[in-house]
Image (cartoon, rainbow, N blue to C red; front, side, top):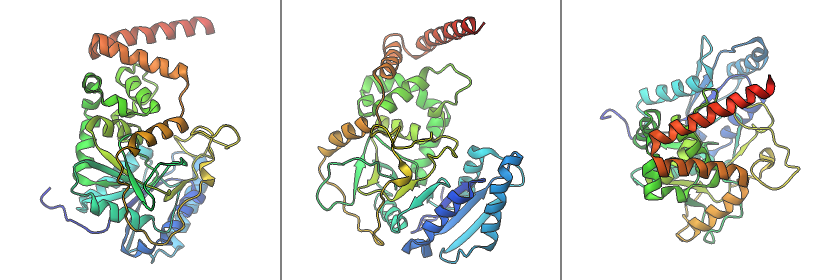
Length: 358
């Protein structure tokens, strides 16, 4: 760690494969940032695993070979010689940035469109809160919620949400989080989370995700609490009494809810105004070319804004009943026995489903 350089400007990592239109939009929006000239960009271009991915991959190759990226301080493309998969492609790209001794970085999916002051916002926040042990990360995304904030503030703290649609990391804090999550310690902390009541800071969606993951017995579903995801980061900041810095007006717009992404469902915005139906690709974002960091100062706003986002990111009573059932199992029996009971329930359901199909 002694060799890490304290650098004023964060590089940005963008893994991609074949979504050429989305990827081009991402890079072009970053080029329009005033602080692009200070920014090192690292592209991780994965190799197509099947023929259906080749056309989009070739279009990205052509764009990277012929495009003008002089707006950036540095532009590096790492082309994979064989398919790594989205997870390993991303992790390898971050390892490369760490090997170059950066002490902070920004991570971006390849379907995000950015405001012209995104890079200035991210860098100013990362610099301001780099040494603050309570601030875990900085996100460029803000949900379309009517936040309760001080007049004139440009950003605020959340202890209940992290969104990875343009997210900034500080190296020491990220490495502590990564080790804690991937080692399985985070899952094993479920009894402590119950005892300290830190679960009360979680949104309903986060509460369900965490306590499902703590007892998960389904080998066909990835346990998102064992990886570096926005799902695990939300639960982590609640557990560790930390915060995520968010903009009052979103600095990013997600175009991945069109069915092209690996994790985002397709939405059309035609039904109720909630997280499952909102048209994220049409969300207004900041149009300002510069950014001044003015933090919301009223701590009472935290609980108000938690309730507002909880209403937007709604979970049904049936879903929450299952979450509380898992919670009660751990609270009453402890984690090891609760996992055995949960596994028994899982096996019984599988047998019943098999009998119905048979």
